[in-house]
Image (cartoon, rainbow over all chains, first blue to last red):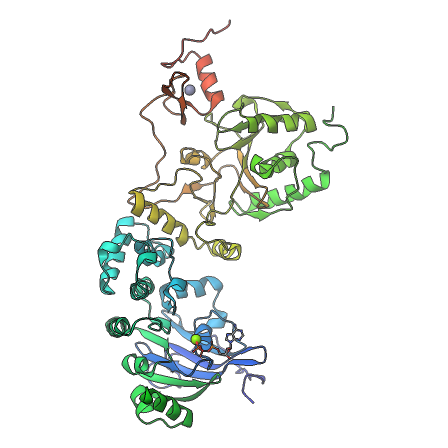
Length: 282
Length: 291
Ligand SMILES: Nc1ncnc2c1ncn2[C@@H]1O[C@H](COP(=O)(O)OP(=O)(O)OP(=O)(O)O)[C@@H](O)[C@H]1O
Ligand SMILES: [Mg+2]
Ligand SMILES: [Zn+2]
């Protein structure tokens, strides 16, 4: 029986803001996740998932189809409501804040400044009916940028950073290849310099050669910007390339977690062993 | 006389009017906020401004003097029909003259003559939600309003400049009311936007099909959205009115029978008043001013 079904005991002194120099070692985490649960009717989406994510750390979530990866990501990004569990996020100037207690306005502010969310299908993450520049500029405008020329300059810079031709600034994303759309979606998310980015299979659905270049780009950006990221993938090679740590899920639960190389080179759980070996067979 | 036999004063039953008035009071209390109301079927098709008509019907008193304009004119079919409707159902006095009216129902224009505290302007609104074209889901736009999250509207203006070199929106130009709610001013030209700002008159907006009313109370701040380096500006003409020589009014281009063109005031009352005061343009001879 998972913790999800049971009453979770709340600490007597339920502080909304956890002490920074608390009991969890040096440096408080950027994101602290405890006992996340989500069911869809009788079906388990995600069960009792806990982990800490530190600033600049990349965590890969792997597992077979239906193991709950996307569900977990959506819970983390507060796009789905939790059945049980708690999430704390390090808000600049406020310390670790219980996300449940954040006002809707604060939550949205966080989502469009300090967080990013890269959808698997770039069409879900882009506005297809406005130009590349407007797509990149949207977040800037949402947080109050009101100088057209500056917004445009920033958007252009970002196209360059994601290795797109800045001359395509005024084109609609509908005319872009899948790989370009994905780059644009990444630029649109990173323009406000978020500290944490969620990505759901960011390279799936792309040609292998395009995938490889995009992965290189992602790795560079993550390193240069010191981004923390949670990347969902069923591709262990993606995890190997991008992630410091890995979290292996099965039927909604975490069956193994650890440093990426350790887990992939020396898997402890039989399920992870199976995953790793099936990859090796490909 | 009480208007049309068998019908209540101003067509709507008193209960409906009270319901609409309650919605209007709420709208006045939250400037620019769209208040849902139980829009009634009116004996006119939606495109005819049933929202504005219901608002007018709800606030109309027996002593009111009503003016109805469409595209600035009192004489278009739409204006004539609405005026006739209230003539028959409420038997109120009507006028063409802006300064005589206590209630002005309008589509597409705000009169050129400055309004006063004793006047109410009622706008017919086809699309109350300014973000509809960018975000079709009403649940989403409602949330955006709740959080004053209006970046999306600037995306639209950005896109205008990127495509056309300037903000191409010339009608229904979005405004921020009282520093809080984003509002569609109905399809008035942006020329009229400055008149919304700090107006002494109460401004009420009714959308029949979308079942929404909203309001700008007197003396309320109304700002047109823009960028620092592309500030809001109104339409300007090289020409002056060919009939009254006005250089400060919104001009319509009119094709003449002979095939020529001329620019004339869209506000026919304004133009007539100026002509009566002796102003003449290039296309007319001085009016006979009767003693
Ligand atoms: N909206 C939903 N309604 C009902 N069940 C759902 C819903 N979304 C996911 N599930 C179920 O929850 C479980 C976890 O699904 P989830 O999409 O999180 O898995 P995943 O690991 O992302 O899979 P994939 O690799 O195929 O994307 C699956 O059994 C799935 O069928
Ligand atoms: Mg998935
Ligand atoms: Zn004139």
